[in-house]
Image (cartoon, rainbow, N blue to C red; front, side):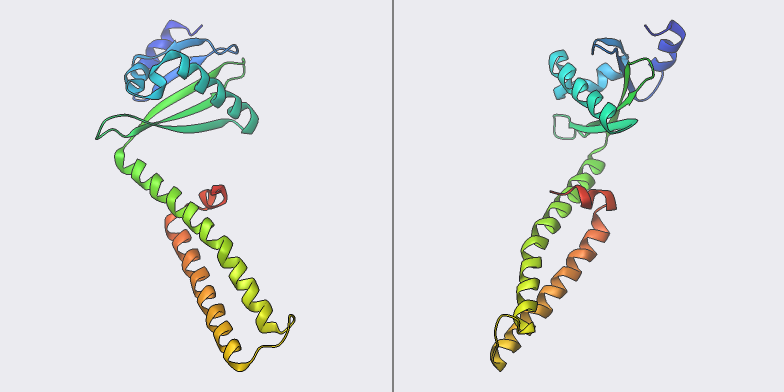
Length: 181
């Protein structure tokens, strides 16, 4: 149970706070949390329980804090960032923060660019390897015309790889590039 003084303090935060015990039962759900959860997937207590359990487990598996983003409904709605922190007594504390529309768009752009650059690098790497192999002569000779065309392919793929690196460095946070699948 959360002492009354602590509960009152938590009620005055601009972020929502939700605490669940080791069995996943809600021990504390602040008024701000209830307001923030309206019109989201987490508004339904059963769905919320499943999501919270999953995020709490990820928190225990991966480290002190785990976060997840949930979209709100409505035209101008942003979303919510739900972060979990494991407490020493087996409980888990979740903070619920509103995410503005602009942050949501920025995140979607980063994710799109990360996935796009990853998906383009795969065939590009094959093209670069194949053209370099053919130019090296290890798989047979090439005539002058074929060699000229292979050099064009090699230069173009190298230019494209440099462009992808530049795009990635401008739009994708370093940790997100590794997360793109």
